[in-house]
Image (cartoon, rainbow, N blue to C red; front, top):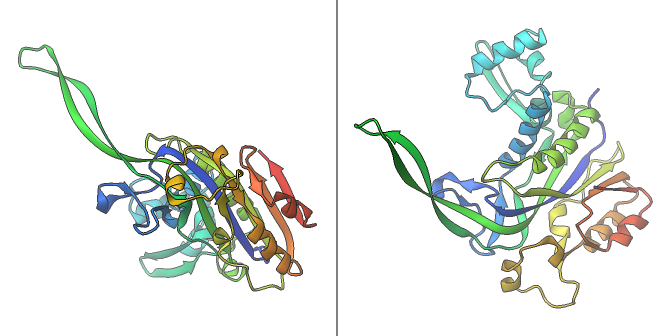
Length: 304
């Protein structure tokens, strides 16, 4: 049975000395807003993080990251599921149930709008972007049969530190078409957190999940608060202004607090329509206004 209650999601994670989302059309420079100097992360990158974790866990997904044609992948899934049609097979895949799919093969074609969609992630502060040059060495055999050292140069970019906010929504009406269930949303939450922590490639090392907040509305509610990522902000505990220069000089999470007071006020305004608010919080993250979040009767806070 598909889920019947709308959700809104806020996810915060930190990046340290890594490239959150390189732009292949700009020499893999981290994506950023040129005016505000905020780090940007595409929704595609967020979904890839989740999918990669599902693959690691052995869950059935359509896009498994391997270079295959649609026909070959479809034949693989048909054999695994025992299903025949494209729609039947796609309903067996966790990623297509949640993120949607466009399918066109043979005489069958259809397109599903996924019930779960993410806005582009954006850092809560201005950041710096460093250009790094390095070398790599490998051995080759020369004409005389002796090993020779060969060296090549590499260029790469990294972000010294960023605290990135991601906003998502789960639409119960779209879930009716794809068959996404409540259990699928649980898998989504777990993969978003664990998958971020498991980004341990060279360019993605030092990614750390910090906050997962999920609002579950009552089944008869079709609205939303909206833009949860814009209802939190960074502040300093010493009372000083967080200027642009100081934002760019941030290097650790413990240098700042995340002010959730505007979000708490928004939750209070919608409390008659909300069933539960689930919060998973990293112990190192400090929240300004956390007592207000705890005071809301339908909030459950889990520390990690």
